[in-house]
Length: 405
Image (cartoon, rainbow, N blue to C red; front, side):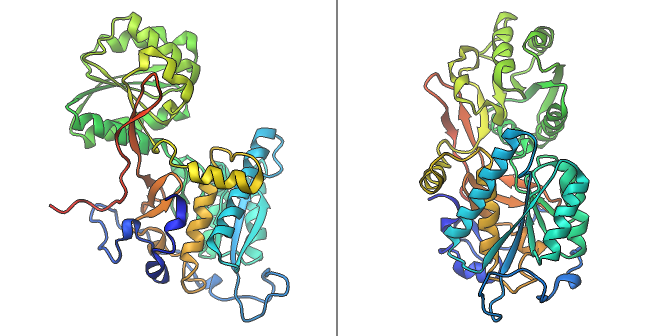
């Protein structure tokens, strides 16, 4: 069962503005969650206004659920335009699947600068948006969030930049911090205690390095070495040789693609003992072409369950005649979540407490929930590289609730 097709099962919880994964309702808050931030001011957006947009011929007694969507529809980059279009189609598909005829999607172009994203937010807020889905890029999220916060309007953004989360902005994206933590904690549970890492000299490398140290501490293990490299296939030899000389029994490689294909053989050439050292990866390893790289065989990485999004892809293809972009499922999840919470009282349904339900929500790629700092936590599987493709060694959780002791 994929996506928010669980919505009907959770109808009772939805009426309370909450959706519990796994059918659990009214479960006490998870103690590990940090306290929620102060509630945003909702007074400016507490009732309908005559100038807010509504559907043609819609009776005045019906109040639309106005959902603003900010994406780079008119980007000068063709790939970015295509991504925005695919995400908007996924949002429309989620609206259709919800069977809520009162949802009204209001689109605005993100533009190429924070100033343009600001104008997009002003337009949507003037049209009566109760919640904003998007933007895609971090600087745009930073620009939009203060305006939305003034109106008590949450932002469900697609950026992976942790620094833009919070103050009413929730990142529904795939965050590398989740992947690193999941695979490191699993490796520790299997007896590995001395961790090393190879990370690129890039923004992604900085994020994964911080997550690596946090995860190793959480695992009560040791970080014995971190080597940095220029993300270039010709620049990995020395860092690979250095990390092989450590006494690590697990090595995180925060890289994918052709550079990863160069790192694997370099480690083997330098004498890495694969019987002693377990290779670990991030979601960048979730690439079918990497299964043919013998040096990575047996390595573990964290990602959604294989084919978790198969039903969504089939539905999208049936509706639009082509496959969705990789990130399109995030737009589907965002609008599906909005539809679920829309059963609540207008202008009071998309609250911090509703969005941060500790039970989480069922998405296309598995369960997810929002943290008090605006980041998201996802239920990921641990997969093993094999020549025949990835094999699940530890399934993705179906609930965030801890087993009873």
